[in-house]
Amino acid sequence: MNPKRLTEHLKDKLIQQALERKLKQTTATELSGNIVHTRPETAAIPEAWYSFQQHPGYQQLQIIRKGSVKLGVSNPFFRVHDGIAGATTVIDGRQYLNFASYNYLGLSGHPRVCEAAKNTIDQYGTSVSASRLVSGERAIHRQLESAIADLYGVDAAVVLVSGHATNVTTIGYLFGANDLILHDELIHNSTLVGAHLSGAKRLPFPHNDYAALDAILSQQRPHYQRVLIVLEGLYSMDGDYPDLPQFVAIKKQHKAFLMVDEAHSLGVLGDNGLGIREHFGVDGKDVDIWMGTLSKSLAACGGYIAGESALIEHLKYLAPGFLYSVGMPPQVAAPALEALRILLEEPQRSQRLKALSAYFLAQAKTAGIDTGLSQGYAIVAAITGSSLRAGRLSQALFEQGINVQPILYPAVPEKSARLRFFICCDHTEQQIDQTIAAIKQAMG
Ligand SMILES: Cc1ncc(COP(=O)(O)O)c(C=O)c1O
Image (cartoon, rainbow, N blue to C red):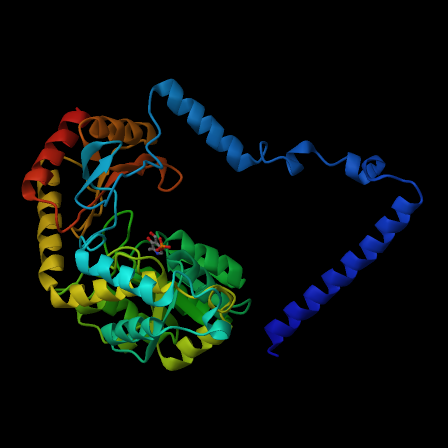
């Protein structure tokens, strides 16, 4: 057993022993007729500690809800779509232009992708019913994983049932108290949760600022064992991307690991949509941990890690989020694989997406809309300056048949609250013109 596991094991043992002692005492007290609610230590516990109504997060939510009602802003969340949400969608019987889904390549709902899912259900049923390690896997898992590994030119890949959990378990498991995790300040929540779980020291560096990262590493590197640098291939709040070759050079110089989360860049960046690696012509092996999600361009659900065999085999045997979690259902793996095949066969989807995104960005700028850092790759922000304004604008556009989500504080700083437009390769220039005109009018 490694020292970290041994410590955890001993900690668990001590907690268990303490609980057993407590249980024995409780039983003895109860037997002596001293009933639970009269114990002084229990009477002193404030209601807020055993009431979900009084949970601070829930209370904050109530304040925001009441405020929105007072200001006449309706709730834009949890809308029910009646069918496939692509460039357009139907909500409550009304057709909308849709800019609120990550269906970048229009593959969720594609006949081949749907067919792949249906066929797999007939062959395997709807669940693999346990962890792949103990209960076995299906050929489709291996086919998908080997296609993902080929995409990056690396040894192997592993798929997990959730993109978020992929980051949490991979980072949480691989790193520990003697390690350092450095991440872009705009990194996704899943990396933050993973870093927290790992117990490693965590330091954000300024957005896309590789020189700042280099400076931090020059100071900090000697104080830690393993060091992980985490970036996103395309930042989902802003639609910009890091200068990957610079980060590769820095990670090599400082003997650190580099992890790139391709949730939004796969299918979007690169001449053929092969992601940030293709965009910069970087060797797949120059990044230690390629991470991505199956839920966006790949029209399914789940996450993947791709890299060298020592990494993937290790995660497959020991990462809790894989080992102690059910295997990916075949009807989720199969559409992801089919979507990946289409992505490779039809690069024009990604090319059209890039052309439309650049068009959206150019038209928005011409209309005087503050698009922040957006580079014109599938995600374009319209900065509104306050959460209230973002909520109102989203509502005004919805009333005009355009579905776009507001991004509110605390997801972004209050002054950079925004509308966030996700473009799909099936949108048209005419739909974009209509949308820009509507934003301009609603912004006044
Ligand atoms: C950068 C990034 N990483 C990870 C995730 C989590 O992926 P999933 O939604 O597929 O669980 C997301 C979700 O949007 C994301 O934007």
